[in-house]
Each structure stands twice: as structure tokens, then as C-alpha cells.
Image (cartoon, rainbow, N blue to C red):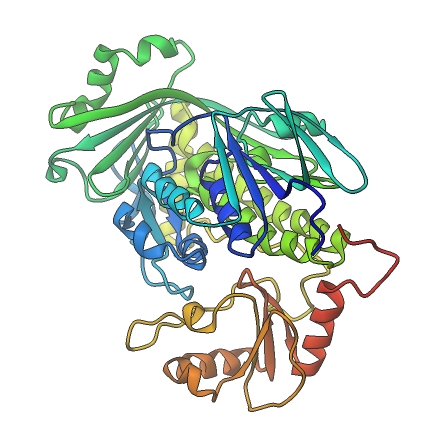
Length: 496
């Protein structure tokens, strides 16, 4: 692999998305420079939730066991009106097909520390904290980035530097604004006695004061209070205001307030996520209100989707096809979540009592008629050349758990997988693990795999390195298609 730059990849922003991307690239042997203007992990909790797919991403980095102490399975999540009537109820976490609980509540700083420790042990990863990105220039073969006045050359650069991304600004990229802009006071607290608080997460759809209460990682709670137009945000962060807001919850006694801040919940998506060798990920590419709990999940999905594509492009794959597929797949998914979160937010955020009464009446009528509440199911990935035509293409391949507790991904290992229902012989391909259901390696997972093949009614499946199904069909045809799309077979397209 050609290395005529200082680094293969520069990652700007070393929050959880930047750290996860840095680790994923470093584990593939790429030389990575990660920079962040802060010297430390932001000490206060931000995201409160991840889902099972996100936990599977952390598993792929080998840090699942270290992350678990900073999580707990999510309790039920209830939307209630002023009278306490349940409008929508989301069940407690259950074990999902990806091998993890459907929802987990988290303490984000703890997870960030885990990811940073991983990066510190990767030989090809270099981290510079207290370093600011200033500007960039692109040539045909490299990106030159100025970091505190010092230039660094890199083959690619990824901006994971948050909502106010300087990389996005340097690219000249604008946001599409979904017209959702609501101010909320967020209070994070360490709780000394959790028996004093509800055992469920609550969304109080009260027009007098829309309020969110959620459990976070072990021993931590969060309240979010929507501010009314006449209220001064700085005054609402005062001790008296906080005590008044918390009084229905038992006041601040027994709590250690870790953070109080006013945020404006936005729905924004960048119009372009790639400019030649420069890309955006996480909040630099999309901002979503917290009502679906998918902000951090979406950023980590970006990193997982992008890491293997950058690796393939830098090792000689068709760069434009690989890198363009990142936004093609991830943007529709992110936009769908933004829309879903805004719809949930508008259900919550009305300050008009008449609108709230109509909302409550509809919820009652739907319940009596047996109409299911609006789904919080995640949207699919967008179409790309790296997804085939079968209905399963673009979905996550399941991760069975064996009786001894071993997980399928750990047994199969990194890279792509070609799994056949019946024993088959044929060519292999660099980076593809080829097995069949009867392989002794898979004995603990055979029943689950047979059940999947029964449902899909296909002879073989090719699973990408991000555990997304590339396509199903005849094994040799799948392998040939994968090779054609991930190797540099067309001289007209120069590799990076």
C-alpha cells in the first residue's frame, strides 16, 4: 500500500465517533492521526442511550466487555399526558437478533475513555490533544491540513468534529434545516438512592411543561425541561429554578447535579458528506433531536460504515464507488431518523392545551381501535452499488449466541463473510471468510443459521465487514460481484 504522506488518514475530532473511527482504521493497519482541541474527554454525560446494533459495533472493536459497566438495559419508555395517562409505551429492552439488548442506557464519558484507551494501544495510531484544525487544501494525491499552524499531509481526512464542525466549514457545506428548534434545560445528576425515582423512562407530554426523565448509565439520571418562550435560559439554570423544576421528583436532595445546560434541539443534515478526499461523520454530518435516542448511535454507524470503505479505497479499491456509497447509504437512514425524532418531538413539545387535548383523544381512539402507535423502527439504508437486489440486502445479518455464551461475530472474525447453506468448494478472496452452515466452527450456531436460511430461502449470503448483508444468491456469483466492486478492476478509476 502506497504511503507517500505523513499519515493515511487524519481524523479531526476525538469524541466517541472520532475515537471509534480512529480505532477501526488503526486495527486495519492504517496510520491515523487523530486530533482534538480539548485535552480531555468532556467530563459530563451527553448521550444517554445506545441500541443493540451500536453495541455490536463496539464489540467489533473488542471493547464490549469494557463498555458494559457503563451501561444498563433500558427500562420501559412511556409517553404520558398531563393526567398521567399513557399515550405510547415502548417495552423494556429485550435480546435482539444482533446479540445485544435492543436498548441500553449509558454513561458516555465512560465509553469514551474505553475507546481512547483502545486507541492508545494501537501502534499505527497517533493522537494529538489540545490541537485545533484550521484549514485544508486538497491536491490530486493528498490533503494538507493545518493544525495549530503546522501542516500535515494525509491521504484522507474525516471531520468528526461535531455540530460546529470546522471541517464542514472548510468544505463549504451547508445544512438542510428541518425547521425544528426548541430550547430545553438539561440536568444530569448522580443519584445516591434510585428508589426515589421512577423505574421507567418518561416523556411527559404536558403543555404546561413538556419534560423528559430518563435513566442513564448506572447511578445516573437525566431530566430535560422544555423552556417556555417567556423564560430566560440563564435564569432557568439558577439554583432556585432547578429546585422548583425538580420538586415534583423529590427535589435535589440525594442528587449530585453534574451538569446543567440549555440546548436547542435541532434537526439538520449536511447536504454533502464527501469532497474528494475529505468526509464528514457524526454530528458534523447530521444533528437530530434526542427523542429517538439515536444521535450517538447514528455517529457510530457512520464510523462503522466508513472505516472498511476507507481501508478498501486506500488499498487499491475503486475509491469513488466505495466512498460515494457512504453517503448514499447513510444519508437516507439519518434523514429518516431525524424525521422520526422530530415527529416524536412534536408529539411532546406542544404548549397549546387544545392541541394536546386533540393528541390525547387520538391516542385513546387508536388504543380502543387496536391501532398500534407510530413505529420507532429505524429506516433502511439507502441504495448503493455495494448493496444487492435481494430484500435482505442492506439489513444487518443476525448474530446468534451459542450455548456457551460465544457470539457469532467473535467466532467468524473481521472482514467479509461468505456463508453457504450447504457445503461448497470454490475460490476464496482476500478479506473474505468462506464457510458453510455445517462447518464445525459454527456448530454452536447451526440451528439459528438454518432458521435464517429457511426464512431467506437462498443458498448463500455475503456479509460485509460492517455486518450489513451485501446480497444473497449463488456463492460463486456473490464472490465475483464482491470482488468486482471492492477491488481495483477498472483502470479508468485511479485508486487513492
